[in-house]
Length: 355
Image: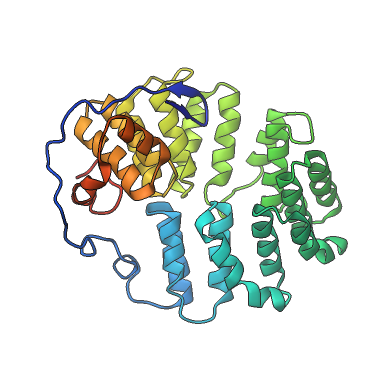
């Protein structure tokens, strides 16, 4: 079996050769008493601003999915809540909510609200509806709106029309009075230079652009990009530092990358399965696909065989992870019979390291 990582591809050979110490039960009690609820985390307030503030804390300390669910508590018809949900869904790629967000913002699209039109265009493009998406933005683009150019550029990039995307954004930034202060536009332009999309790769230029902005409202995505530049520059210390900073701001993908680095042991970073498992645990808690399975493999290699096996089984039960299921089937493990054991070992859903 081969797993694809953000930095390197490696072969894995982990098998279930030891019996589980606990026999699975045929039924189990409801886990509702152990789940962290929105009321426990945010109190009983229905104030829009309080819920938005709580959701921002949840991004950093729980998960983006949980933050989204906090905002579902908004009882009044609040555009502010929908804007924040839309930012979460698109910026952190919560694909399970794409369709529901499109439905939620439809009345605002009908009313011609620019933020709703932009969000609808970007989400529609995720489904391959590129022309429809660009038509929604076109009136704003013709008026010279920089956000319209930024979003059009993003859609063109999804279409893999990289040079056109780069020109659309760079020319709009040069012509706009806010071109040197719009953080989203500057970060997007940096990515063209970082990855050589429509323009020659220039890591130094990318780093210069990223370093010119704060990125406080970008959910840690800016620090994640900076870490990638340092990785390409073979500076692992800064790579790890920026990934950790990104994770503190709520960007869960950084936890996955940190796990990959320590699992493999790359460049001048020593291999450490226990540290890898801790980062995979954070990634799994934030809902990243495949992280729970990797957490299990790291725990097994760290000598935590029982926790590791339960984590792999949980990946099969809770996430239908294809790699976990393949491994379990190859080892003749009837993983669904262990549902209650998984719930007992992970009462909050995903944490196998502290129980």
